Amino acid sequence: MRRSLFALLLAAALPVQADWYLDNESSRLSFISTHSGNLSEVHRFLTLHGQIAADGRARLRIELDSLSTGIPLRDERLRAMLFDTERLPEARVAAQVNLAQLTDLAPGAQLELRLPLTLTLNERARQLEAELLVTRLDDRRFQVVSLAPLVLHAEDFGLASGIEALRKVADLSAISLSVPVGAVLIFTAR
Image 1 (spheres, rainbow, N blue to C red):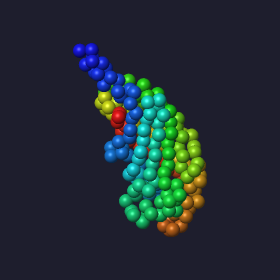
Image 2: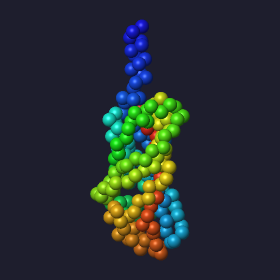
Image 3: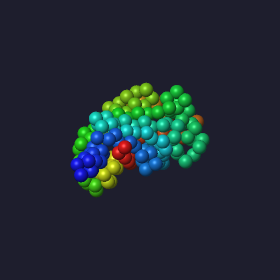
Image 4: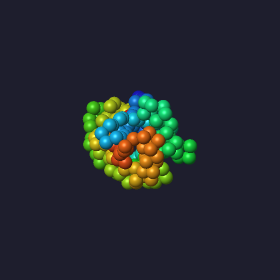
């Protein structure tokens, strides 16, 4: 009886003590590009890797080669002329979260939070603040959704010249240097 009780308590405590891993298949990271003054399009990255460790260290890696705009030639140009994915294959996000605050949520409960994070892209790191909604889906999963898009500025990451090169090659009148980014991330305990 004592062993059964101990096993039950251990199983109940697992999601609190476990690392949480990103479910890439159920997650999405998208961004909006605007060109020619008023034409906006939604694009996304297909491959993400993420983890929240038991100590609250959160990490997300975005494989820049997984960029998907729906137009293969544009994907190739963005990879080569903007992101230089042969040299810099990924972007990284790092943050520190209060994991107990998330794991203490009951299934179905939600929590709004502002989370300071660091985005490293094109060898430049910038501090940002994300507005997020965390929803506890069940005992082993929670969802993190951006409540407001993060607006990234190309100049902050040394990408303005790449955008200008893309504008010229595509013969566009303009491409916005500000890019809204949104996310839906599902984490699972392991």
